[in-house]
Image (tube, rainbow, N blue to C red):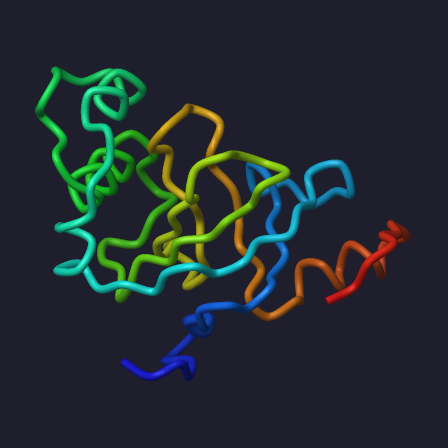
Length: 150
């Protein structure tokens, strides 16, 4: 799949891009972080990613070993947050957000075509990725300021 928007979907970002991230999807200066895209992977590619399955199962409140890959973790998040995530996702986007979390934060499509992260290594990893800068611009237009612009 190319990096252009399809239908009403927000575009797929490129590895290395610096984007805005809003913790819990709440648009405010105190919830604003910068994310660097580290991965853009298909479902088949993420099935082979290693992560600590015991920690993930504990965080998600499921039996040890019942979630063994990122696709299964996404499916679990979809069931827990009905109405947020799209039925399918074209890619998984991994981002480094060092001021927010030490782990890679993984994003999938949400039902409005944007990107929302899934909880994987902690219950505090949910948030909105602003790939077009529109959410950040709305924050600025509404009177918030931030010292660094992308």
